Length: 367
Image 1 (cartoon, helix red, strand yellow):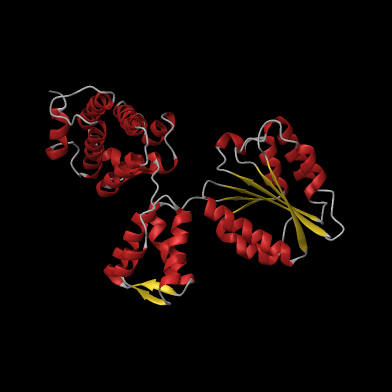
Image 2: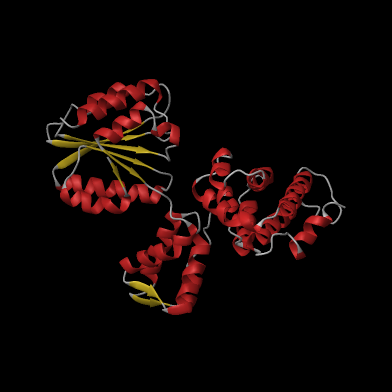
């Protein structure tokens, strides 16, 4: 059984199941969902808890299997928590998890909680994951996307009786807050708690938030790619600065941007050759958030625009690796800024040409 995180509180009010699987890469939200399950279980008499962290290929799964059938003299019910940080339980673990799942429904004295990182498509098709999902409740914890972050912050502030001003001033405050904590939800949670300690319930001014909230943003190179395809120039510049400060490899950043440009070019060529857009996207393995972004920006991009962007990516690749190009910055990260801005300008412009400022930048790279 699959369950959305938002449905968990109502689900727990109705009934507690003997097996839960939480998977996702957002530690705060996974922790909160697990806490909610544990709290409900404790209220129903599950007073004992054992935690088993799968540390490698030589992990002793027999201890986990034995835990499900053993209770201390002081407890009638227990929580058995299995953490698999790698998301790969191995052959012995796969068999053990299937056994745990298949026997969970008949074990009223044990609640099993399995914690996993983000699970890929292939893992979801595995026998052990299918058993966990089929015999229990599986909850996929999705990260809070950047566009939804201001609203998430507002909701969390409201829990402490705090709010921002109405209108543009409040939106400015929330956007500032979101910029400071992007990609670091656990730190965002801590900053919200700090505001609750510093200021009483009521309205928070921009100045109060600006002075209190630390810059704890953490940037993901793949989110940078989405921001560039979205034409979010200011955010892209901020993310590039953050990735450089965090020590991210310039080669990886270039690879991510150039892969998107190459994919755009391949899909555009397929469309020009007569392939329907949905088929072209599927053939190039473009799906999810990227699929929607490609659908929006491809009509704005002419083949010439994409040729220019592809050439700019080639020039930037050389600069990142130590070469020089006439009319381009000599430093790798500056070249990445220029490449990213060319892409932002191209996808944001209603004109199907890199043209103007962005096109000039790309054309100069040919010199």
